[in-house]
Length: 70
Image (cartoon, rainbow, N blue to C red; front, side, top):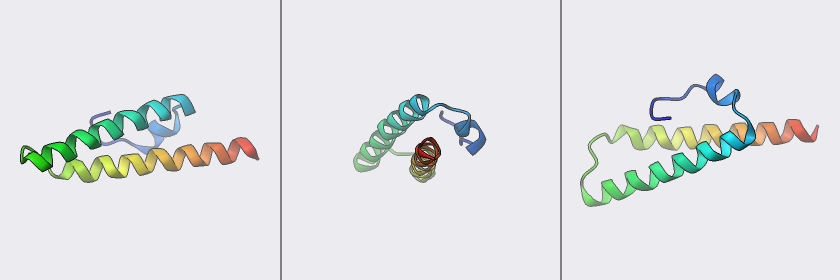
């Protein structure tokens, strides 16, 4: 998702969908880092958004894993 994600949208996703979303966000993060290194990055705030979205997805993955164990 390109726009800012809401926790409720991510919470509705399955673990497989969260894994796919994490892969997409990591790819976007790589591309943003590459753009920053080459001086082509225009929206510098997007780096922070992507980093936080990655943390949000990882948190939900851990919560769902803990809930499955219990």
